Amino acid sequence: MRKHILPAITVLAVFTADAVTKNLALKHLGSYNSFDFFGGFLRLDLVFNRGGVFGIMQGYKNFFMIVSIIVLLIMVAYYFYERTMPALFRIAMALIIGGAAGNIFDRLVPGRPGVVDFFSVGVDGVYRWPTFNIADSVIIAGAILLVIIVYIEDKKKADGMEVNS
Image 1 (cartoon, rainbow, N blue to C red):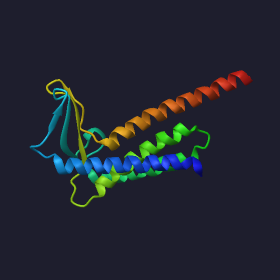
Image 2: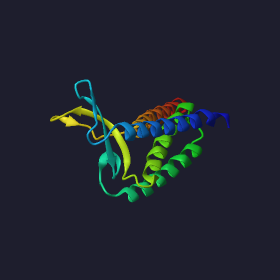
Image 3: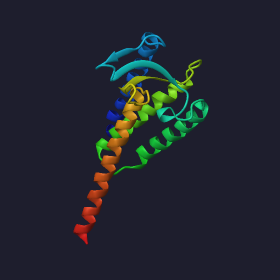
Image 4: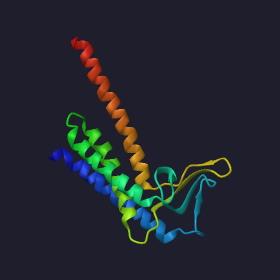
């Protein structure tokens, strides 16, 4: 049971940070109120994502809410199913779960047209990454960490099998 304390704290911290920053964005940003940093490379600008990841399929808010809930349930099940992974695996999963919960919660807020996004990175006229939020960032970080951990663990198993053969 103790091994789940840090992941639970991580989920709560991610969810809280995401909610607080989204509320700050709603309060301080608007269609005429954006802030540029580093010559405009980083921009804080309020956008409502009515679609999926990276803004695909705009207007399908309910579809993506259902898909997100299903994926979240699968991730939670996988977290508890996979018992042989190291502690870092649980943290990676907690990042993904916390971020997914934050975006799902955002879709459930009455009257909100979509997920609140406010970070915009890129160079105008060259390329600007789709606007994102804290939840999106930690989901990506958790997914990258998860891929690395699974690769390392699979490599350890394969190397162990070669030694025992």
